Image (cartoon, rainbow, N blue to C red):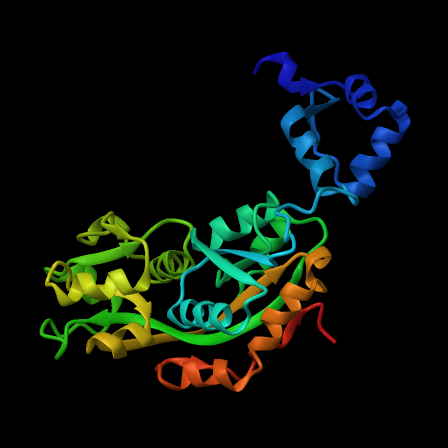
Length: 302
């Protein structure tokens, strides 16, 4: 590796404008990124710069809300969320909610880079059944607030009548079945990959594994058009399109909000809307949603 990308203890001390003894304290107490090679500490410069950014307290808070009260949301797509944003914008002329469908991981990356106010995520932990925290701990030294948007049911979407008699992932791998998949970084793809690993199924054994679309609705439409036999998605899509559905899990779909945004009027207005009858009515016409936790603070918790 080019030496300019690796700093010695003296160089990182000069870079941080501190004495060398303090560098060792930062390694032990503050997690300063470092590696030991032949008994000497070396510091990847790009990781040191990222560590500084993560530990900065007073920094520009990303997208400006301005007088118009813009609220930028990035992350996982959801039918109820799309309807909620539309209704909120109709009811609150002083505010404007806009959404970028980047997948759960994309939403967290956007929030980390101060490009949005709220990330939408449903990432199941790799070693637990909890959601989002494994990934948040990787990207934030100070965890943002986590507010539940809803619980929703994920599972397998199938052609009406289930003509291939699919009941499990093993059926998809062993039969002449074509899958339509979601992109890497989406919570749905993470869920599928975890299930495949648990059942020791090689993804390459599944037809269409590399055929990806951007939303749950697109998964359902591919199946309706006969372009795929099965896909992983939310129950609401199966209900809307008349598809069969095999449930897998109730997942927690969360809003992730940096603390410096949390008490802004526009953010509070949106969170307040989630407790209103108009929002609850939106969910009543959809299947596969549970609002019993909606609006509840998951972190910090009481």
